[in-house]
Image 1: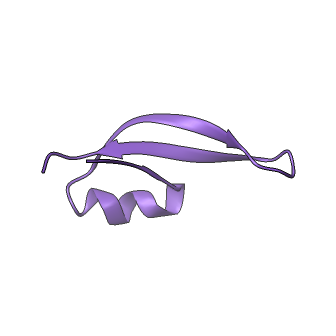
Image 2: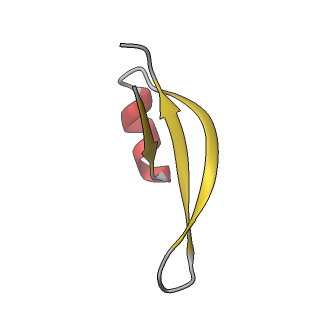
Image 3: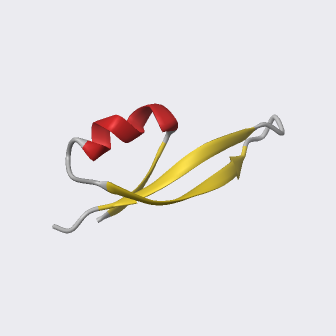
Amino acid sequence: MALGATLTGVPFYARRGYVEHGREQALLPNAETLTVVLMERNI
């Protein structure tokens, strides 16, 4: 199972067994960027 989490969501998903495997920058409509933490876990 895979997901993209915000920085504040990482501890929540980590407690549920997800592991970080990368980061990406998402460009928002207002030209700002948002860090997306790529996480996955085995089901």
